[in-house]
Amino acid sequence: MTITDIRGTVKLNNGIQMPYFGLGVFKTKDGKEVVDSINHAVEAGYRLIDTAALYGNERGVGDAVRALGIPRKDIFVTSKVWNSEQGYEPTLKAFDHSIKRLGLDYVDLFLIHWPVKGKYKETWRALEKLLNEGYIRSIGVSNFLQHHLEDLMTSSSTVPAVNQIEFHPHLVQQNLLDFCADKNIQVEAWSPLMQGGVFKIDALKQLAEKYNKTIAQVVLRWNLQKGVATIPKSVTPARISENAAIFDFNIGPEDMVVIDHLDMHHRVGADPDNFSF
Ligand code: NDP
Image (cartoon, rainbow, N blue to C red; front, side, top):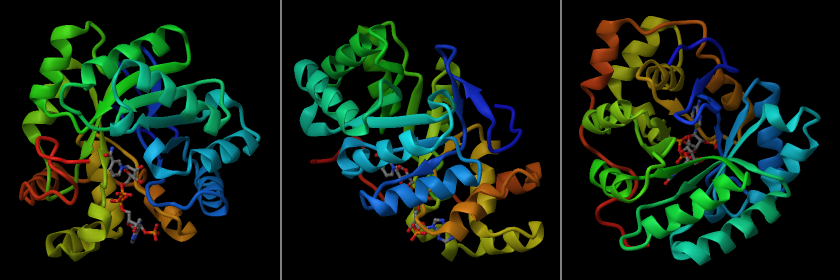
């Protein structure tokens, strides 16, 4: 991944260009809050919005995207099918609901939100159909560990374009990153700021001082230098701008290692091998 600026993209394994930096909207309220945060983000240069059926704000995301006044092709919209709607027919129906709520003709990236046992292969088959029909430009997964990816790839020749996983300095999963790189699956970080947890890590405070940046900026820049796309969430205009100001410095290799070594295999979210929702 070559890092240029906030508009920079990475080429997915199906040739689609995806911005490697974007806005997450988990827990952002539908309506004014999500519309305002997207407007501010786009003004600051963001070109990717990450939502999901679960977040309950696809309607607001679509309203904001349609009203931006920039060509639809210049905005990258991701959504996801929720666990209770997995399986072939339910996924087709769930997608229909998502796209209607968004009010868009197509979605740029659609993900299987979690690897629901016994279901995700059928869910994938539905996503392949929607991809072939042009309703989705690229399909991917989220919260898939190596064994889930291997299992999926035994029954389908469509390699997921993206695997969106929990990723921050306390959860690096280098083996999974290496596996995805080997299969040309782009990794994307969720909760890159550990939902606020990164601000308490002393080593990051020191690095922030060294680079004259904030902790959030150091962490998000580390994501990109690891080759990981990232989608920090904020509804606060100053933070939305702050998080985007990461294209004017470079973390040295010795400090990349310092951050890598903060790994504690610590999750703030569920374990993909053991979740019950
Ligand atoms: P993040 O790690 O992005 O942290 C978001 C929190 O950090 C918010 O409370 C926000 O506050 C605060 N924050 C943001 N920027 C700053 C800053 N510069 N300084 C101080 N505080 C800051 O958590 P998320 O869990 O939201 O993850 C990001 C996105 O990843 C989600 O929004 C969603 O799109 C996706 N996701 C996907 C999952 C999956 O299973 N696929 C699971 C979880 C998330 P405030 O908004 O008040 O400014």
